[in-house]
Length: 416
RNA sequence: CGGGGUGUGGCGCAGUUGAUAGCGCGCUCGGUUUGGGACCGAGAGGUCGAAGGUUUGAGUCCUUUCACCCCGACCA
Image (cartoon, rainbow, N blue to C red):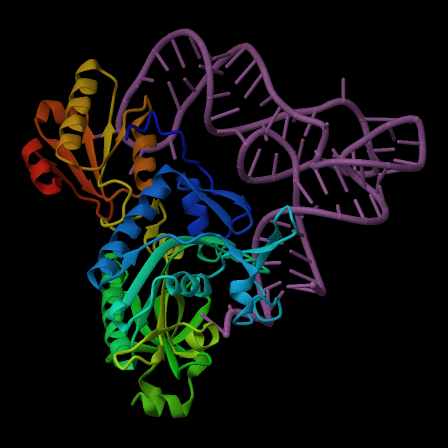
């Protein structure tokens, strides 16, 4: 991408109406645009990051047998009345509207009921199970108060997966594989060291659910870490009884603020019973489906990463999800420099390297400042110096030292 | 939803006891520049969130309303 053609611009100052670091930086660098409180549009750079996060999640979900699909935002009232969750007193985040003929519809804040209704149409026999499906979907939630930039909005992108198993044993096996897949996801996202499998409230169905909590000062949750066991306990279930069951001593725990970046649930057969979601088993009898639910807040993860990986100069994207690998800065506008930079840009592109090419007629200081603000992992400079020295300048976003590398070395380092 | 705060060119802000709406950044044009957000000159751009009211006269006073931010509550 040539920066001269990118329609978004960076700003010198963060917006005055944002306090959260993630929103300030993402708006300042041109990744997102605020449409209204808690509602953000993703611009070209931001969308790249979002897609990179999705790619990592998708790979892992496919690996454990997930099938991707896409449900709808518009949902019928009847589906939710079955479980009592159409009621605003039960679910207080509904956005609701009406069709022209006064039929009531809701906007999906979750897709649990909808998925069950859909799978019912395709499930008859135990031979059809297990079924594991997932999607990336915008969730719409009428939150009383939006806050923390893209970390808690009224419209946000979520990966939600649902597992349908014949029995508890089959469910547990998948549930365990999901925990492992999630662990790999957060590791690939660069959050591995700070993300803990956390015991949290299981609601009405099971003793615990498992949350994935990332240590982060901007978070809204309080968890207690057990670094030795690499697990954590959510404040909401910190009882002596629970600690005893988990074989954890209170004095070994460390209290931290964190953000819930994922949550997995065992529904048992509770919801299946409510919704009459069953199949015919080997004996020819009707049996209820054992359900599980597995979420990852994709856009929230992006906010957490912006929040955690940044410095005074701007964003610092992990290589796996950065909108580009190289920020190619052309210093000067002599014909020879332009030609050399254009050529390198083309060569890198052909080698499959994602490059953000700063071909603008701007001063060096501005280009360096933007490179830092946008947070591309590596910066390559083409200037009169590099031409006479016959080597390009390479600098890592996280380091101050500059190294000089040849074209071949660049390609070797960055080509996939 | 309770409490507090803020709305003035694209962005960040100033605007006194009510009297022709300003500054910085950004933008356009010309020139000089070019290794950490350049400089000089000339320009463009605003029904002051909205509606109503008081007044000879309202960005400024009054009423209503909307939006945004913060704290709290809420977050199966």
